[in-house]
Length: 373
Image (cartoon, rainbow, N blue to C red; front, side, top):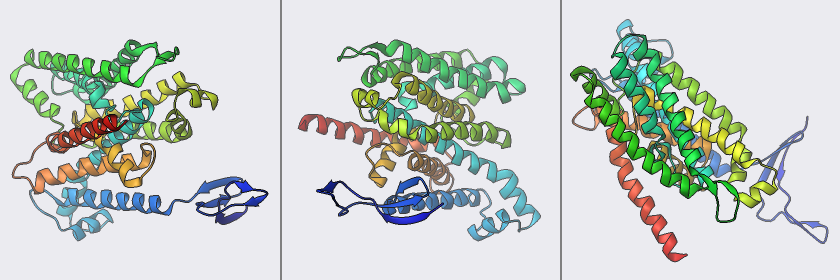
């Protein structure tokens, strides 16, 4: 195996290679990777910010623990009381916020890349509402304790999200303006918005049928709360993130090809409908399980890919960058709700307060582009 670092050769003019302005390439045997130093630095900075907020989330609480002491406990030190607070009480919550945020950011990046629309996120398309309806139904019908609440809610949320995605996909299937049969991004977004409103009405109806205790628990869950998470919740969230990450990274080239348009993608040999179904299915799994664990955390899947795209300056929504930004948004919202704001608010309220103005910004920006074109 040979390892070399040299600039990527551009097109040749009369047999003379032109390397001016070309990015350097890292070659490891038959593998060649284009080096983008600025992108690597931005991703490293996002990872460092996520780690810092993760430690601050553990340090924040009723009894504040200095950041240095948190690092000491995580490395195996500290007193018995500090280890209980950090490892048993606060670490599962911080890890869940980190994993849920990454799963939502990655799910949003997949849907926005496939549908070529910055508004195409699981919470805008109704996937989150479908998962919420499934989980709320289990909570109300099965009670707030026992096996139904512990294991049934994530499974019901996953089923609700998948059924919603299938319904949207089937209703959006039709003939495009070019004459091809399939799913178009605009049609899918419009149908998703309509189903989202219908599913939200279903959630409200189920809550009205619940007793007072279950209704209060459901209302808290619908705001996206981390107050009741534990180690049992962390396992399905981590598994969902692993599935979405493996599918997304394994299909990264296919996802890049899907951004080029139908004709170009088909000329590259990509099976458009099957690849779309696979990637959307992975996105639904991540968003549904995240919703089942902490409730609907609004606007993270919408905003994270767009923020990452602007920070990394990529033509499409970056996968790793979107996951990191999603983790930063959820963990940062948890830190802000417990340290900066006067009340310990659910993270969903904090992210919605940020996501609402960001949605208006996207709409204004899209309207200006449409006017100029």
